[in-house]
Each structure stands twice: as C-alpha cells, then as structure tokens.
Amino acid sequence: MKTVRVNFTIPEDIVAALKGRVSERSRSAFVGAAIHDRLTQLEQEELRRNLIEGYVARREEDAEVSKEWEGPTLEHWG
Image 1 (cartoon, rainbow, N blue to C red):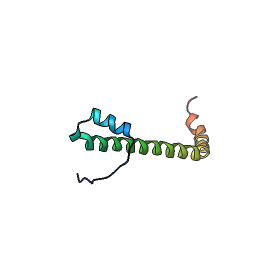
Image 2 (image 1 turned 135 degrees about the vertical axis):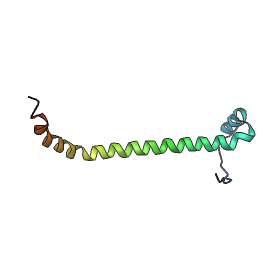
Image 3 (image 1 turned 90 degrees about the vertical axis):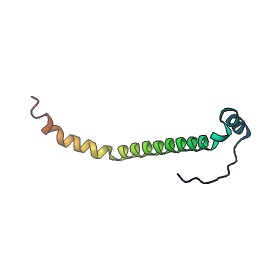
Image 4 (image 1 turned 180 degrees about the horizontal axis):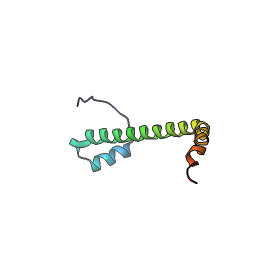
C-alpha cells in the first residue's frame, strides 16, 4: 500500500501516551490503524442514521402495503 507523510498537531498527553505504549517503529502503523478504525465507526454511524431515516420516511407506505396484504395473508388461517 502506498503511504503518504502527513503532519498532525495533537495534544501532548496523547503523544506521551503513544510514546509510552507503542514502539517508535510501530507508531505510524498504530496511528493509521486508529484512524482507520474511527473512520469505519463513523461510516457505520452514518449508515445507521440513513437506515433509520429511510425506515421513518417509508413507515406510512409500509403500513399501507401491510394493510393491503393483511386480508389475503390471513384468509386461509381460519
């Protein structure tokens, strides 16, 4: 995978924690993985919001379709 050098400004306490827990040779990979994980989380949150919005927007239409099929569906249940 192609890599790109970037420059971030982050709080000193986070840098200290990073240096204390992750070896110098592994920091770029660690930060990259952390960013990837957070971006994945944000994408999942956005998808969840979009699904909820879609369900809410279609609620009335879905209720109408269910009502239309209620008779034929229950017809043979006796």
